[in-house]
Length: 410
Image 1 (cartoon, rainbow, N blue to C red):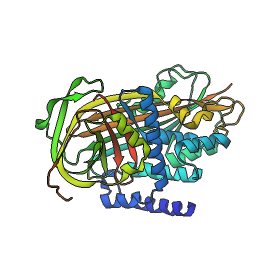
Image 2: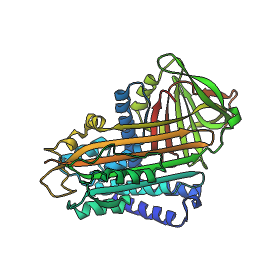
Image 3: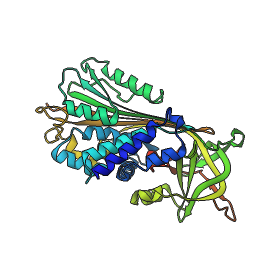
Image 4: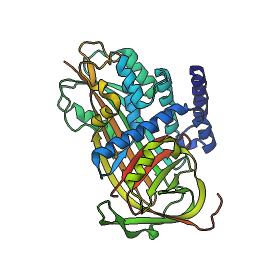
């Protein structure tokens, strides 16, 4: 596998090096580069994303949940490079990397990042990583170099004793997300904080076929408590990837040239988002398959939302508790011990705006390490997204979910 992945990496490098700006890459060339990606990385990331989504839905009960599986898993992949022993084992099990070497994980995410930065026409996507270490703390050079090499991580020594040190990190996140996420750290760093690892993602996609503003009307959106909320409902008729099965409808709305898309899954009126969740969580791979192309009308709310939550309770419930244990966590690959390093907090924030022109989304994840001491159907479909629904922004050529969430109230 290592030889295969090394060859795949060379293929990818050659293909992407032959292109100039991100918009210069053709759809076919990007598809060829995507075929070099280790499919296990995408499968693991999406499955982890749905597991995390499940935990957050259970925590937030009836509130909007919007996550970036790519951002969270990439931030934790950088952290994983410093883990050892049982800590490394439980992180791999939680993130879906059991059976993969650290080299394969790193190469996989290097390929993901390279592909996401070569989006092609109609899509802008920025993926950035950084490590912020306590000034004077001797971190292992091998750990820093791994994250520089595979994740293009900016490594900065910072005076954590300065009460405004966290504002420097927040300013970097603000810049990388085009001012959509002004801050990731809500308070000054603590005396026992030694390292902050951050991933930031910014996405802006133009619909392949825009919605006409003149077709947008004020309509009712039914909330889970039975009441109605007025929303601006966009409407468009066209040919889309569309699937209808017992209990739900699903559609893909392409961005740019079709290299990325929004997946919308709507439960039937006789069903519920809760019932749809059970179906979603049972098998992450079923949503990566292409749907049949059909003609029909899609009605979709235009809306804006912000989401932000610590992920610690969810990650510990998913099996990563050892990484949070000051006495047992093993991150000896980051710095010499004692004192032990352990995960103090994983914070995640997202932004989403959907309108007639397209979609703008951003995500940031911080991991703070502490020291202990085509065929036209006979009848067109109608998909009216006027009740709670699930959505994902996906890379159509790799199948990776950049963002995923449940929208109870747009």
